[in-house]
Image (cartoon, rainbow, N blue to C red; front, side, top):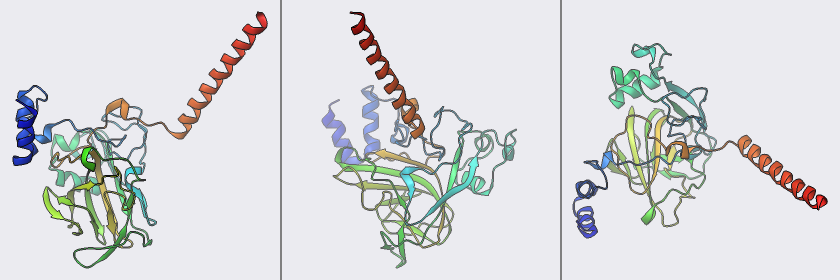
Length: 291
């Protein structure tokens, strides 16, 4: 099977049609696009837990809720913890802590019941309260003016062709919000500037940028009315145009390689190298005197 055949299937019938060809060539074992191994660019796998000693553990350990720089606040938005999914939780028959309403309602939307609601990788749900800033305003398809609520610090996210993908679960508690880039809600293409519906919903947004990043609208370009409250869970960012379906748990980063150093650790490493450098100088100087 040649690459031209695979390319023709990509253009004529979509990505899923090409997966069997890749399987036949021994490249993958997946039978559909949603089973391909896409690694999340977020170091904490979208768990809103910051630095993790064991990033692939189902437990978060001592990690506390930490806002993500991939969805950083903008225009004065405030980000707080809305809840935490707890592995082996007592709400669903386990021996660990209980779940609160934002988490239980999210599980319902995810279709997770029984043991699937009791066990799983732990994660936090973030609550965004929009500020009063007026930067990045946009008028939605419903005529409502909304303002940029999140930014990504101009992160380099694009793959070949300038494409990048963001997906997450969101619930609008008060006010309203929309994105200004092509969006799918629960897998259905709704276009741009359409207000998020009530309740928990899966959002997939795609950015096309030949510059390789979005420095102007803070991809995924979430805009909200002043004072709006949104709850966001299980975010994931990918280079390229990625469609994994409606995910139901954290999408893992690249394992240990996905860790990031805290500023304190960076300082400690720098100090260690400085001590090593000084020690080498002392050894060289000492050897010179001995000669």
